[in-house]
Length: 294
Ligand SMILES: [Zn+2]
Ligand SMILES: [Zn+2]
Image (tube, rainbow, N blue to C red; front, side):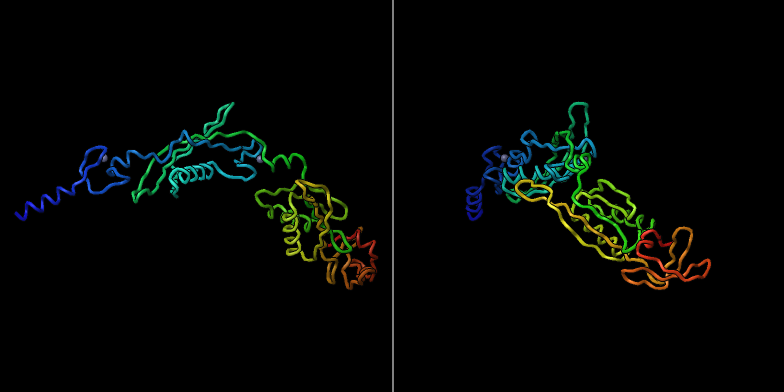
């Protein structure tokens, strides 16, 4: 009697999946787990339209102005799509990436694994999406081609000409201070020093700081208005880098003489000794500008 009642009670609460008829106690969105899983497609690749630019000069991938990668753009699009569809975050794993480059059209195929949790169930899906690659010239490459610059680093020395090795170091610092988007658009070797034309003001400042840190001296900035873009004034900045002048103990070459510097008289010149003859001599500021530290 007891048993029968228990059985009836259980039978009363037995539930079935309305879709497949399987007996179950656990429902997901009012169907059984299998039917629920079957009914869900996380990603319909046809709904995703992914395109990005590929620069024909440097080969970089771009979304708008931002440099990116195929993987990053695909992940981002998939995440957005799932958020839109199910209002949830998901995990995207790129399993494989193939670039198919044809003459006319460039595209890439990306195989990915999407993982998401819906109604407390872990769902995993493999999908393949196509990415259209549009050929373009990126901003950086078109600027390089156009000789664009926003800053000039002018390397000079106080009352003397910078030595060749100093300029070589300055140049090295310039190239190693470049960010991904930066570039040196040109260099001009002048009698009094070196001008380095760079793509951004920040980059010019970074280079100037680096040179001063390594070689001493200081730098100042002056900006010049050179145009307007989108309602904003655009400036070009000159960085005047001054390496320190001659100092006591330096050996200096002038014409065919080598002079040992004994005293620097600020604004006037230097007192020194001709190392060959031992004779004391004085170099005027004008003469100093022809002399080189050796
Ligand atoms: Zn079912
Ligand atoms: Zn480019």
